[in-house]
Image (cartoon, rainbow, N blue to C red; front, side, top):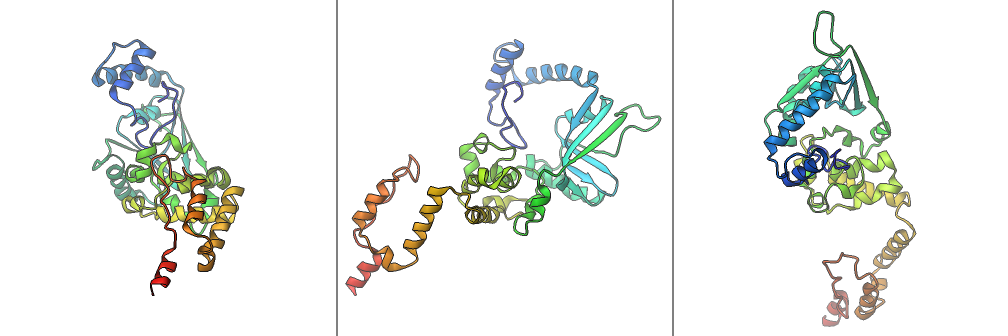
Amino acid sequence: MQLAGEKPYHIVTPCMHKSRQDIAELFTEKFNTPEGSAPEYLTAYVRQKLREKFTTADVGITGANFLVADVGGICLTENEGNALMSVSFPKIHIVIAGIEKVVPRMQDLGLMWPILAAHGTGQQISVYNSLVTGPKKSGELDGPEKMIVILLDNKRSDLYSNDDQYEALKCIRCGACLNACPIYKNIGGYTYDATYSGPIGSVITPFFKGLKEYNHLSSACSVCGKCTEVCPVKIPLHHMLLINRRDAVRAGAGGFIWNSGIKAFEFALSKRKRLDMFGGKTKNTFALLGANALGEKKQVPRLADQSFSKQWTSKK
């Protein structure tokens, strides 16, 4: 993704949208590797090239899947070993992690690590699970001389203080909700234009980047509930998206046209007499003004000349 100048497409598998042919073409362009190289060849090439970077770097930067309070350690979960090499070779190890990553005890990892593996990549356990409790000690050969842990709040405390949405901080970033979401599977990760995409991203991004600018993400949801169904830590994601919509309306973040239209809609639907004030022909004329309201692939349905209530009354 760095070579292509692109951002991650998925929070667990960043280049899931690229085929092996796409990657082979990219490596041919950037490194002059043979055209149509097999994945095994490209893997060996990358391993050799990155190994030089790891062994000569002065500073290694990693995230943390969990922060274990009782032992003061950070957990790294991976399938390649690159994070562990970022810890082992450089003299300084810098950890950057959100404050919600903290788990109370080391024994909690017996639950959290298998859950992350199963829902993230379909494994019983990830290939590499490392617990790092500090820099190397006297007499140890491997590891950094200095370790720095940076805890990010980045408005997470504001989210935690919200009585309706605080449970979003339980997320372990397994990506299961993205994989199940019919919206994500159709529009892809880049459409969200945010660090976290999919259902969980639609819930938390308005808190991190502003409700007014990102409340539209909460409307990119069919409320099918599949995300809530597959979430291993039981976050009611589809319900939270509805709460985000509610909060956006209360904050007036929908824009003048949207807010005015909703008020007119509410006024018309609040009484049957108002709804039946105009016949089907007039309503269809107004409906045609928003011909693309349902998208290019759908047409706005035609309304009957008389409403059901009028037809029912006349037949009685």
